Length: 43
Image 1: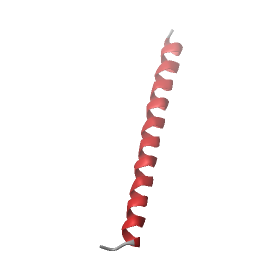
Image 2 (image 1 turned 180 degrees about the vertical axis):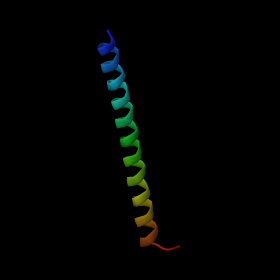
Image 3 (image 1 turned 90 degrees about the vertical axis):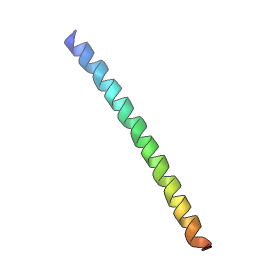
């Protein structure tokens, strides 16, 4: 029973970590896009 709970907990932690990583990557990509757009047209 302990092993089953440990596996379930591990899956939950890995899943949440992957979601946070994807969100971070998306925000990083958006930031780079905004910075390159700002450097192309200085206004």
